[in-house]
Length: 221
Image (cartoon, rainbow, N blue to C red):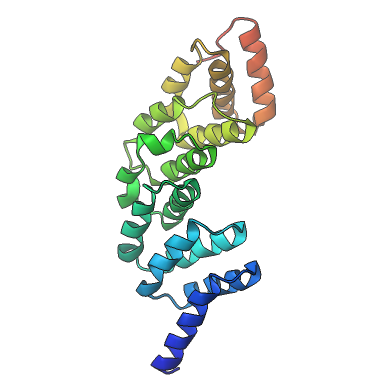
């Protein structure tokens, strides 16, 4: 393939990312990832922040992972400061897929407690992937401050993140299981249960925790 043909194909792919049809955008993202070029990275990151289709966003992230980390990482990290929630969330998702722990310092407490539920959930998942060895306990303490927030899916995401960190989360969960807020206590007790028995199921663990809290107990440490 000649250089001119490659340039033409690249231009068509980048133009395809702006097409009104999601199927065309999906194919364009696949094409960009199949023939990675550092010149594509800015466009891919920008598109992640505004792309409405989940499957296209996921393909955009895949395309970014096909490019050199030295090129993608700084650009994706900058996106974490965006005022747009989707841009922050998709950047966090992309960082978790890149999997390079150089990104760890960018996962700030502000992101882990972001007011937007989806951003916070994605930050929790990314943090579990990127946390350096020895930092798990400190991360668990920060994550525990989010216990009791949001809807069922948000609480399930947080419990999964804490359980994924393992036994290092136990002290933070013990503290939260005695919190003044009953919602925090329930969530902490349910997560303790899942830490002891991952097969228990979230709904069962929550109902069990509600009974314990209703009876004025704090469960097991």
